Amino acid sequence: MDQASSALHTLRHVFGYSAFRGEQAAIVDQVVQGGDALVLMPTGGGKSLCYQIPSLIREGCGIVVSPLIALMQDQVQALRQLGVRAAFLNSSLEAGEAAAVERAFIGDELDLLYVAPERLMTGRFQNLLDNARIGLFAIDEAHCVSQWGHDFRPEYIQLSVLHERFPNIPRIALTATADAATRQEIIERLALHDARVFVSSFDRPNIRYSVVEKDNPRKQLLRFIRANHEGDAGIVYCLSRKKVEETAAWLKSEGIRALPYHAGLDASTRESHQTQFVRGEGIVMTATVAFGMGIDKPDVRFVAHLDLPKSLEAYYQETGRAGRDGLPSNAWMAYGLQDLVLQREMIEQSQAPDEVKRVERRKLDALLGYCEAPACRRQVLLRYFGEDSTPCGNCDMCLTPPETWDASTAAQQALSTIYRSGQRYGAGHLVDILLGRATAKVTERGHQQLSTFGIGKSVSETQWSTLLRQLVAQGMVGINEHGGLLLQDSCRPVLRGEAVFTARKVRESAPSSATTVRKQIEFESDEARALWAALRQCRRRLAEEQNVPAYIIFGDATLQQMLEKRPMSLEAMYELSGVGDRKLDAYGMAFLEVLQDHARRYG
Figure (cartoon, rainbow, N blue to C red):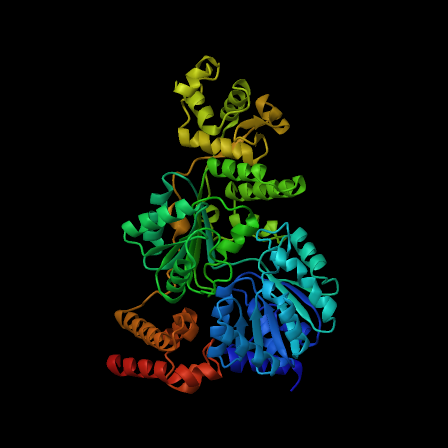
């Protein structure tokens, strides 16, 4: 059997899929033949298969460098369900368990071994490598090697030693997020100069992107969940640990099954909450970005941000945790100018070199451009990663295009107020001046005497806040290290009345049509609803018996095919996507009995 046939045979009989997607086949072929590869593929695009299949075809064990314990455990569990000889080495193992894995590795009894970068670089593990047969090295989450990336990890820099010590063993580096600078640094840091680079489309068409302006964000979040995701699994990201815990407690008080997750919780609590989220159904995890990377849960139906992320890379990576199974999902974010001020303060107050700060400012500017996009958000997002696209028709800007107004006069008033007040005050104080509010701060500084005091009473407070954000987004107004607004040279034509400034009208909240996604299962009848419940109950029972997450038995997409196609034999079930040899043998009859019993009952 030639390599191409062998790869397809493995894909069908082990993983249960009849055809490769996108460039998977070319990537697999490159690595199977011994070549290096750098793979950029969106979350849910099938990156894992790009090294798992070559590991099964090539002689020796595939070594997978992975940054998180949770990812290793999830993937190893899933692979063992498929009959693949997989194991991991990390700090969660007792000494005896680790020794057994090492013996299996040396004894050529493993197809895949997952290991953390810190352990990989130890002298002990390097000796193990010298005494084992290695099929390939896979470096997952490769953006961690880049200091310009959003998740830099110093240990990754040392991974160039793999090329030095094992020059004839192929390496495949994989990531879901990397702009041009990050890609180049990955190549340099990992010595992948001769690697073939595969860049898949970054588009996730099943995800609907929406941004709303903050106006009691907790209540906005609750309305969003109630309207779109009652009973669904989701992730809510917050910037601080305190906000994570407060938000989780508040959602819980409102009847949402919410759990907190952040680095300040003790290890046992974090592990317990993560396990409940991964194995349960309908749990909302409220978390800092410490949670999420490597979480292999395909049925997360939404990701919400209550605070602005650090960059578009971070945002893309975090929202990409929704809808890994390809079913309709939401990426929802609430933000305001104060978020931008806070992120700028964090950049300026960090100990990073000036060059790093400049890069971080540029990344934040790009994120602001996305938030204030006057048209399709997906186009802005994809353009950032060097990809052109047409309007998607599946984001809030496409579904409900914003109204605009000639804000030239209002912009002049705002710019003049910034100038006359000394170019050092935040948006809230400036809006107070424009609206003629004689607050303690306004009167203390004598700003009620300014010619612009009260000049903007015809414009609402929310619209003024929106206008100031748009002036910042277009580079006419800057933000100093203390959060004060100051004029930029580019504002002069507007200030002098030589240019028109068109602004978006404020949208108090996103229209329901902009966030509502098609339910992943739309039942045509009570009979179909009953079958769906029976299939899920069967899956839940088998998962509890195996002590694994339900999706490892079969994902929602496979159950949906059972619902639609109603296979009445094992041969017919084998035709479903996601049903390979091992799973057919292990679970086929259990699901077939459910389908046959249902047919008799409703026939």
